[in-house]
Image (cartoon, rainbow, N blue to C red; front, side):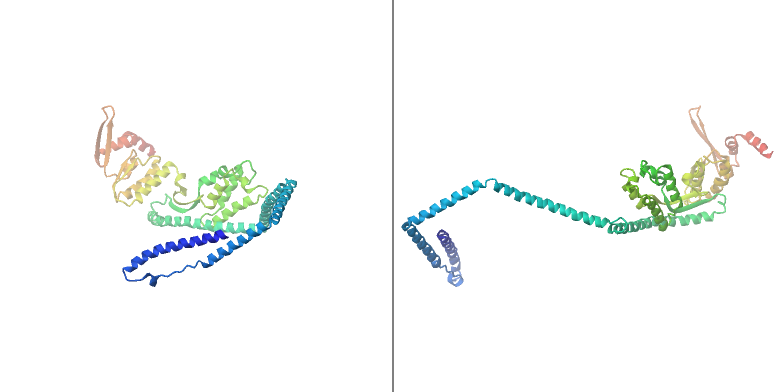
Length: 424
C-alpha cells in the first residue's frame, strides 16, 4: 500500500512538472498580447493527504515490526502453524491422489453426457414435430401444404399456358389477311383445299418417346411398355390443348394414374434421375407448341407427299407473294403428275403472270404451252463438240414451235400417235 501511494505521489509530481513546462511556453506566447497567464489558467495540486497517508502507513509498519521483534515466540508459533498446515495439505493430497482425477473425469464425462443428451433430446423433439407434421398421410399439415403447393403449381401452369396462347394470338394476326386472300380465290381453289391452322399442339417427340425417355421398364406401372404408350397416346388424343381447362384436365388425368398406384413408390416408376426432368417438361408445358400450320386436304406439310408439298408451296409463291419482281421456277413439275400440273400449277401461273414476270425452266408441255408462255427459249449444249452452248427463242406462233413439239412432246409423230389413240 505504501509503495502504491508513493507511486501515485511520484506520478502527480511528474504530471505537475509537465504542466509547468507547457505553461512556460503559453506564458511566453501570451506576452505578445499583454495577457498574464494567471488570467487564463490556474491550477492547484495538494500533496498533503497523500503525504499523511504515507506517513500513517510508515508508522503502522514500524509499530508492527517492533511488536514482532518484541514477541519472537508468537512469530515462531505462526511459522510452526503454517508448516503444520502445509504438511496436512500434502498428506491429504497424497491420500486422495487419483480420487481427484477420477472426480475431474466424472465432471468431464458428466458434461459430455449432458451435451449428447441435449442433442438427442433436440432430435427427439424434431422427430416428434415431423411425425405430427406428416400425420397419417390423409389429414395433416403436410397434406395441406402439398395441396397448397399443387394449387400454386397449377397457377404457374395457367400463366405458362397464357404465354403460349399469346403466341397463337400473334399467329392469328398473320393468318387473317392470308386466309382472306385464299378466300378471294376460293373459286379457283374449289378442288384444291388449302387452309392455315393456328393452335396449340403437343410435340410428337414427347408423345412418341414418353415411355422410352421416362418410364422404368423394370417396375410395374400403368405406363410401362407398349400398353403404357397406348394408354398415354389415348389420353393425349382425347385431350383438348386449346384451353387451360383442357390442359389442366390432361395434367390431372396423368397425375391421377400415377397416384392410383400407392403400392409402388411414385418415383420408382421413372428411370433413374428422370423424375425431375419429367416434372420440368410436364408442368412447364414444354411438350406444347404454338404452331402456324399450312394444310392441304387437311394434312400438314410434313404429312404430304413431295409432289403435294411442292405444289402447295408453289401456289403460295404464285398467289401470296405480292411483290412484282421476276420469279424463277426451276422444274416446278417435279414429283407432280400432268393432271396436277394442268389443274393446279397452270391456272395459278396464269394468274400470277398478270402482275409479275415468271421464268420457268421445264420439260413439261403443259407449263410451256397451256400456260400461254409469251416467249420460249430453247437451250442446247453440244457435249460432243466441246460443250458449245447455244439458244434460240421466239413466241409460240414462231418457228420455235417445232422445238416445243420435238422436245416437250417427243416429236410431232409421237404427238400425232397419242392424239389418234386418244380419239379412239
